[in-house]
Each structure stands twice: as C-alpha cells, then as structure tokens.
Picture 1 (cartoon, one colour):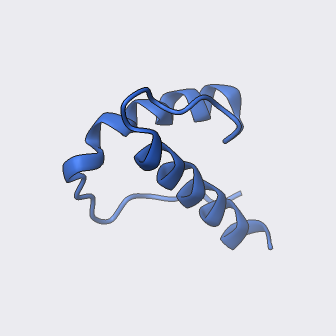
Picture 2: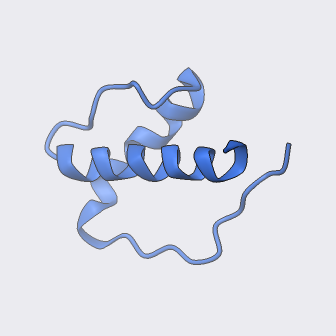
Length: 58
C-alpha cells in the first residue's frame, strides 16, 4: 500500500471541520459523526477521503 501526502493545503472556513480527520483515522471509516457547527465541511472532508480511497483501490 502506498502512502499519500498532502502537497498543498489551504483551509479557510472549513478549518473547524478538520477535527474529524483523527476520528476517521482512528475508526478507519468515514461513517463518523460530523463536527457540530461544521457539518457541510465535515461532509466535504469525508467525501474527499472516500475519493482518495477510491483512486487507490478502484
């Protein structure tokens, strides 16, 4: 399995939702609760993680 790395990261308004990332890693799943007050950005992060997984395994 190949590790991915972040080349460039610009957060802005969605920075609060980044708190979801350690939970996704710990649970090894995107089926985790969204960050309160940052639901839309939490969903966007979960979708990005799923797309990254798909790009490696599909």
